[in-house]
Image 1 (tube, rainbow, N blue to C red):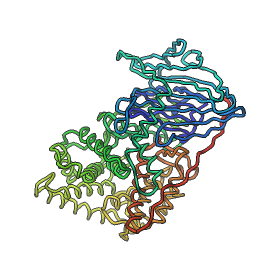
Image 2 (image 1 turned 30 degrees about the vertical axis):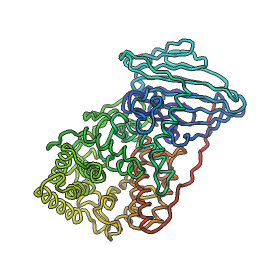
Image 3 (image 1 turned 90 degrees about the vertical axis):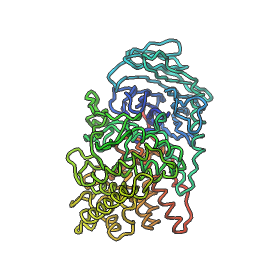
Length: 612
């Protein structure tokens, strides 16, 4: 049995790493050391790269949901003989609550099987494969524990059901009866650090995870429109935060394809500066200012002292800069989509939009940056100076083109944003001469964008200077304040982009993009709200909100024809887009004197399973 569709998976997190569990009870992805570490279960990318399944022996249907305000997953399997629930959680530190969750997680995955009715024969298959499936570990068993040790990785599995060890695989069978409970705890530790994997009680892991996630959610009370969707997305973004540093990874996976069978398969388990400003806005709107503060502290530390060299556009979760890409040619790839990559060579690119992302984020946080430290002041000054020079240069753009650099309009607009926010900061980050220089460059950028970005024949701003190609990235223009959304040219651009790139509410980035890009679709929602078209914005928002999987999760893209989720999963950018669009709708409703609405109805999906 393979890993199934991308959207079949649920997302577990512990503040350091993530696991993906499918509807059939299989853990198909877990990198326990940290988000971007090697996997011990990698069946998402190759059938032979490891998994851990607990499922009924006979045919079944399954329904699942998160326990309220948590990332603890409960799946109910129903067969002709009864029903059984499997509850999955990555462990938080015992007793950790609020903003402390995830800081010292023990790297433990717990699974609790509860018999609900009748009798259900169950099967366990435990097949760890280390380093992305390269290494088959020796399995050694004792009465209730199985150890797997190879290379630098050690796993220990404790179960209160009989397990039989084979060559690299352990299996077990048991019967879940009404009222029975069976426990499984899997702990990770490096082989040579002197410690053994922790194996806490599975019930206690689940209870602590529930209490920890709910304590965090209880500190953040969003009061705007679409509360349920914003709350779920905020928890997902928090789950994708590497808590020791505060960096938010773009996604929990690597190399899930933008197009089935295609080769645009990249590693997204890193922290992009581009996401930074939008993440801050989302955390702000979702009433998470403490996380916003941590985010700004993280980017300041990661960047260090800025000179004349291009600003790094992405980092590892602890601020690493060298993210050199290499292929894992032994893996078949998801749905035979090759190559599979670890690392991402986009770290080498010049992407000048990041200058605006950081200064915009600083402006959002300006009251929390007062008094401003010398380090932050120097950083903002240096970034503004770079914008004065770099706006004239071509770059790889926000879509990270690997063929050639161009004069992308979104990059120019974000250079304008950097200079505009620097001028607003004024003497807090520079002297009068600096401010005058930044203001002059800002005005020059604006004029060039208005002149060379506009295509009279298309009636729209295009993706690059003097281009005929539409690009959804131009929708950021009203969102950063470059133009009002009801400006005639901007309004025309919104119409043209929607008409040519949208289908079923899903907006592609450009004409040949293979699928709708979720955050671009939410940018259109935000633009409509800013233009005062609240009803249209709400209709589109609700169309998009209905595109999540049954657990409220988005990948990066969605096929416009089939509705299939594509790309790395779950995708922080997509959830950030939802939160920010809901905030724009809320603001527009306040301006228009309209009452709010709380949620879009969603229902649990039911799926069919077959004998394993």
